[in-house]
Amino acid sequence: MIRWRAGAVSRIRREWPGAAELEVALEADGGGADGSAAPAACRALAYTALVGRPEAGDRVLLNTTALAMGLGTGGYALVVAVPDRLPPDPAGPGHLVKARYTPLQCTVLGADEQGSPHHEILRGADGVDGMPVVTADLHSALPAVLAGVEATRPGTRVVYVMLDGGALPAWFSRSAAALRAAGRLAATVTVGQSFGGDLEAVTTHTGLLTARHVLGAELAVVAQGPGNLGTGTPWGFSGVATGEAVNAAAVLGGRPVASLRVSEADARERHRGVSHHSLTAYGRVALAAADVVVPALPGAFGTRVRDQAAELAGRHRLVEVPVDGLEDALRALPVRVSSMGRGLAEDLAYFLAAAAAGRHAAGLLAAAG
Image (tube, rainbow, N blue to C red):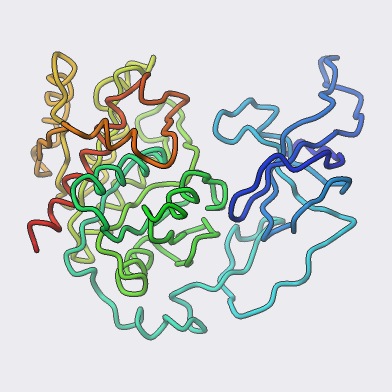
């Protein structure tokens, strides 16, 4: 289940809030079971709040499973410990345990727990006051949604509610860190088993309430962290939670805005046009009505997207949103957008669809005054 390796830190390649990317010289282990030579070095990621900040020369214990599997998003070795220089014990309140009953379970202060300064606010909170809530299947939609928001209503206070279907540590996301630093994102709330946000919450529901009543969000984006689990089956994918997020937003009196996962470049037919993930999550899992944003894409591909989205009309409100100007907004982002290894040039339709959802959600705020 876990491939263990040990090595020594050669250098720190780069850092961003909560994480350090390292180059590690691996100790000899005799090579692979197939007789292949073991790599001499690898990239590794250390979450500094968990293991401390490794320095050149430190011996580190690594989990190299994702690296050996060749995963695109998570293709790092992960630092499990710096055994010869352990970090100090944590200080401060918090008894909400995440990554529970794993060797790296951690204790955080939940915004909704009894010891939190926000507990009284959240104990009485029962709704989000009509706040638009954009739901998206993939983490890569987040910057694109923000581009659409900024192009429509600059300065909107947006909070990201991160689900636990992908990466659990919010620190893995360089894009979220850069968007926060650039002022495009006000804060992140990590919910479920995910952790490392500006604030922590137990459920998607309390995450949305925290975004609204503690962080003052005007608009929330709900999506999983980086990475995605899919099995090529109708129900076996982590994006099922997108439909559940629609339900959470609706039951709290929010305005769910469903961002479609669209692709013109994916080699898999089930993801061409509108992905079967969106059709399942919104067509089968979401029991509450949402504004499903249909991007007004040109040509035969745009017709295909509109025809596929029509399957959702019985349950949801289909809203066709123009995409003019959104490519420029995407190019003006302070981060490079990428999804499944494809950028704007390779799959512009994907990013335009997410940006259109941001445009519509911000338009709801503008219309409300």
